[in-house]
Length: 208
Image (cartoon, rainbow, N blue to C red; front, side, top):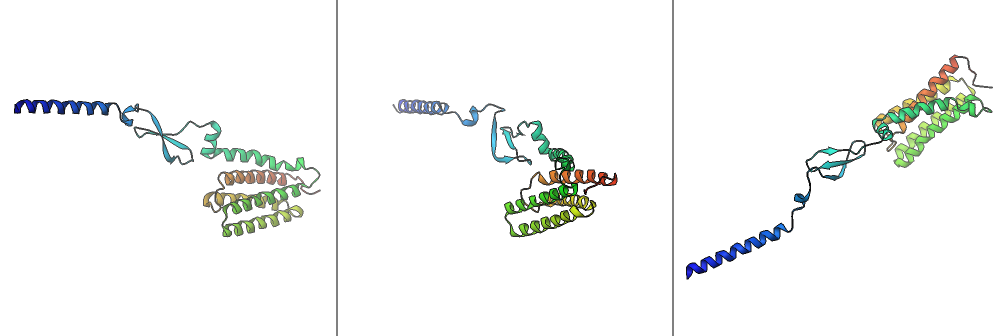
């Protein structure tokens, strides 16, 4: 009888184990359901250019496909390309404002582009940055005013000087969150300065 009791207990234990195994099979692991190669977005992960990254379960990280314009901005070439275009437009600006001296138009443009950094400084919020950028912008305004009635070379000096300031900002990031503006503005300044310098050497007059 003892042997029969042991056999019955063993049989019942096997049945319980099979039922638990069956219940576990009814609830598969989430990892088991995922197919190889399925993708998930890694929380908080991003590429150096600020683009989201997608990671496969095998650990391979991929970036989404970008448009041609996005690739240009990511590589830093788009601000330079647009800067060349706007540099030519700035150099030709006196044509659209024909009732003003060319020196006056260029002087206003230097004052305008110098004031842009005041806006960036206010957005930055640090008092020291606001004070420095306001002082620098004021210096360029004075130089531009001198170029209105003085030598046209002062306009060239102002544009080149502001372009060098843009280059310094691009490298130092003294003002926060200027992003693509410094290389864009630098290219405008250098292209416009080169065109104006050629015009001066060619004998073009900047005062009526």
